[in-house]
Amino acid sequence: MDVVLLEKEAVENLLPQKFPFVMVDSMLSYSETSLVSGFNIKSDNIFFDNNTFLEAGLIEHMAQSVALHTGYQFFLKNEIAPTGYIGSIKEIEIKKLPELNDIIQSEVTILQEFAGITLVDIVTTLNNEEIARGQMKTVLAK
Image (cartoon, rainbow, N blue to C red; front, side, top):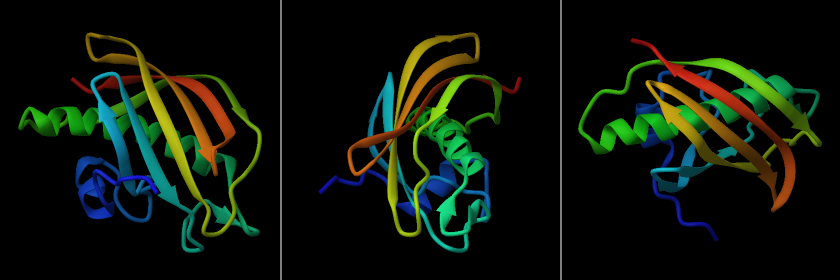
């Protein structure tokens, strides 16, 4: 069983997104260069349709995992995190869509960070099986 560092409410406080647009509900690990987030797929999710969590939801989960890393970084410095935006998405590969009550995890690895622009590698798993991967560049609002 994974140890949850931050539960749903604490996670939501670190994200700019609010219900019903929150796609991350736990933080399982954190370092300056990585983070593992979790998300339990529920039927009331706006990206849940026909018993599956849609591609757009998976990509949003990945992006919010990056936002959680940034938000927690600023939280540790006792500062308010600026809003971030997806600058680009590169080579997203989705192998499988999660279903109701599945708990997905995304591991974010920071590849480069410079002047508010962060390049990350993201791997999403379900029961230790890789279901999605990709790279994103995020940009902090000035």
